[in-house]
Length: 152
Image 1 (cartoon, rainbow, N blue to C red):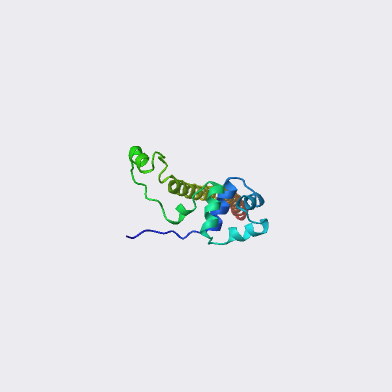
Image 2: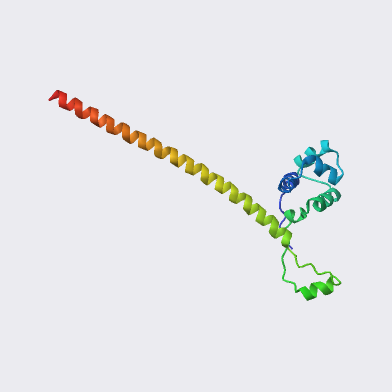
């Protein structure tokens, strides 16, 4: 079976979630039981020990494992899931993958909006420059007409 696995920089993903929760690096370190000076190293690394990642998932309330391999969202009835889970039905099957994908799209949208604002500002500057050049041409045309009249 061919299962897609994404290449994820886990440190960056953790840092984004930490910032989203407005959690300081020192508070994050305290929660996962790591000295504050080691937090930056964790956030810079693209790998992490599985046991530590489980703790990070719990503390940041986000399933980072779903970033590596998208969960297949299969339609399962609540009744069957309740039976298979001994009454502990979890109707959020696949929500972590969907949330991760949504966050990625939100980030892309912010980038596009930022690019659009930049293009609008640049367009406005170009319009002002064109208006200045048109005014300059009118002045030069007037000067040319005056010079022609003097020759005559």
